[in-house]
Image (cartoon, rainbow, N blue to C red):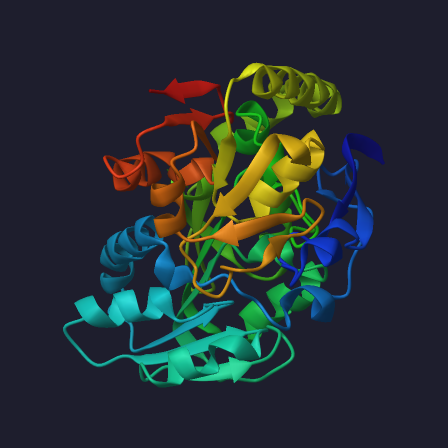
Length: 372
């Protein structure tokens, strides 16, 4: 096993805290990624799923760019004329509601998610909700299965794929943050304990073949800082050989030295942020923001974090002691600087902040940007 990156000891990034003291004393776990001889990359420390997912505060429906992404996806799904769709880890049902709003025929919609928090949001929208882990429950077959930004969360890949084989009768649409893009764009904040795996196309092709899945297409998506959408089927699929250019590109990248470059990136960001005059607030109490702040380890330089998710407001970011506030607080406070932690949605966030926020807006990943 070859160590790719070591970010030290980081708390569970989505387990927001009720007090500053609790946040500063949050339990920390090693956060390291290793690569094996088959180019499978994963953490060497696994946390029990119940610790991370039982009460999950992130809600997909507050993420406007994600809703637009889901609505665009429907045009790919619709051409298969689906009758029954399963969303794996579908959160508060945002994707399935987006599909339902555009469909010209009735759909049977099913969401399998590990958090009890989203039952009401799903069932009130006519979505059948199973509060369980994928692979642990039989929900019947579907002609379309969708899993967006969830495959990398599963420590037992074979159990997940066995669930696909058992329930699929048609098309599986898989989206995940593409680790080659993550590495090339210095997005080390995509690494956290919920993401057990960091997938490339090379190891996935063999895995999918072992479970009777043929890859129909692979396309790049902008969502989550650079994702891949892979469309698979267990029907007749031929041999399209769509993975060739991805596999060749992955072989050329030097993952073994990538982590050293990230260490230099963190140091240069620390120096720059310390040199900026005035108060710095942050925007986006997302997992990646928590990783970034804990990696910098300069909590006294920041004042608070702004987030639009009501369930997060009033809580504290683990490891930092920073309180999460709403936009109105930001607009009244008008700090000189605002650091966007959710940089994967930076354009939408910047547009939504102006003209109410008048200070400088900072973006540190993938490149440093300062918007006056």
